[in-house]
Length: 111
Picture 1 (cartoon, one colour):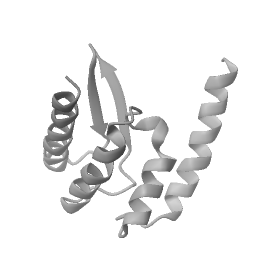
Picture 2 (cartoon, rainbow, N blue to C red):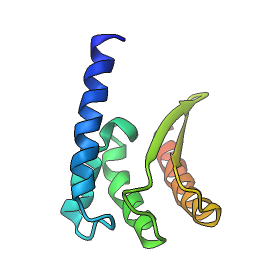
Picture 3 (spheres, one colour):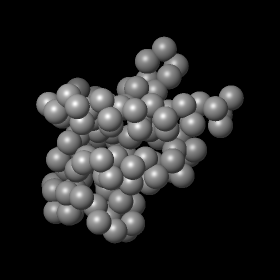
């Protein structure tokens, strides 16, 4: 493994531990901002996402998402794919609708 990868893994483990200390429902704006900062390796990194992520997280929280459901981001064929890990397929469908809305917003704003 290369040095940077090891460093990122170590940092993510430390950040996951810090995230576990937050309220799972991120009840305040400060908690949302801290969650985004701690989970930055798993979220989109472009500066434009800095404004979108807090609103996306708020909407996800409103329908039942919590921090114990991991969010992962991949870029596939030049487009973002953001996934929430949950076994609840009904909730996953609703979460994906919100995520897709924010991905589309990002893509429209960055044409």
